[in-house]
Length: 156
Figure 1: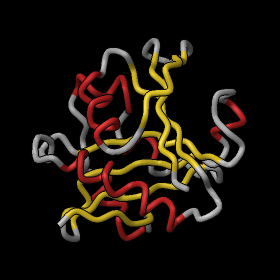
Figure 2 (figure 1 turned 120 degrees about the horizontal axis):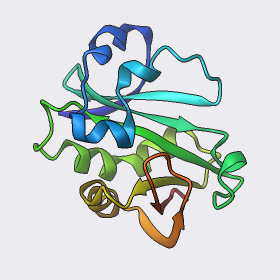
Figure 3 (figure 1 turned 90 degrees about the vertical axis):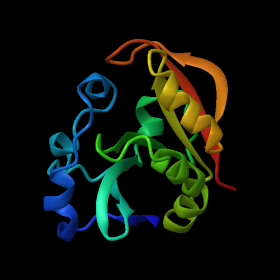
Figure 4 (figure 1 turned 120 degrees about the vertical axis):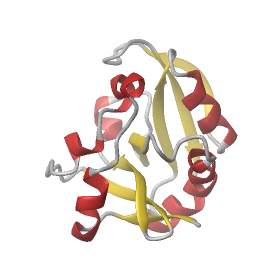
């Protein structure tokens, strides 16, 4: 059973063990790189298989202040990762399908979620689009790993 939950200190040790495949690190980084960053504009959420963390994502409340394409009443989805040993089981698709309801519950004042996905990462783009995100047709050219498609999920 895949569920989503806000990160708590009780998740820390297990989440530190989540590892992204080497070829995916350029797109997301490793969870261990960001878990202990105390950035007030970023909330960590945990992807649980039963009660065991198998992934995470971050919600960026200040996304619209550094991405001109994002709306004022939106957040950004960042650092979406699934452990390399849990990949291939459809977990990312399940998470994306659950995001709309989950994020609306967690952030009832937010109208939409934006993310950028690297042009060299078509598998992630496919998962996001099948989870309800739409391709805005625009690209973000300043990604650290190259050009990215801009995707949007409307919550309300």
